[in-house]
Image (cartoon, rainbow, N blue to C red):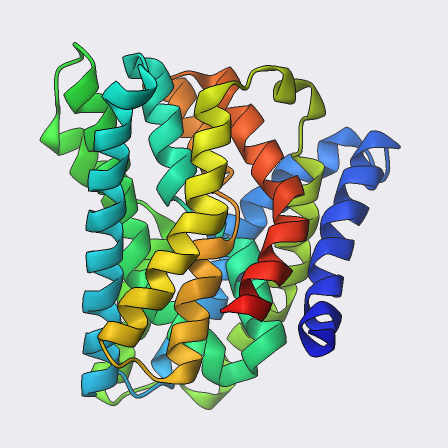
Length: 302
């Protein structure tokens, strides 16, 4: 219990620091959007490329982990579809409920993994990220398309996936690893330094983005999404990992990704595609705050 609390404390401390800094006006409102943009487009891609390029990805363990991630997401997506009529959710509300139930905050997941498992965990986390990000973007867009009257555009979907910097970074790192080329020493050292900035700045940005007023827009969709994402999904990840015979660190990394709050980028997608953006903001804020209690609990128990 104590080692997990010690490892998680800096993560939540940075979230709180980001929240307090923005509310106090420091270093200024103009700082946060460029900081988040730099983290998303430069720092996190550098971290993923640097870790994946030097990792051994061709083994059976990597393939097993990737297939397990796909299975977990498909099962959870089907569960969400079953919940739609049971909870009597309208189409816009369902899309926010779905994103809140399955998506994950990359910044928090990588930070927790790094704190608990170091470089070994980050490599496995990068593999999980490489599978989860494109698949969840695809599933999330399909949730909007299949529950609304908007016309589906395959071209726009593929274009959005092809321009995602985290997807491109994962593909680049995997290609460098499988080709045996790796990163040149001079470039690798630069990417490593950039990657070190990603986690603290990303966590500060997540904390700065919390919106307590959005908690007023809640109800059963917020409650159900939070229960699935923060408690049910990590339990499902643990059970599937055991059934598949996944080793201990891989199991822990998958449980971490399942147990962290939903992605802040889900709000942007909800706003752009006609979802319930206010509900999405409430789910993001609620899950980030609740995870301060549930994440240590889940990791200790599982």
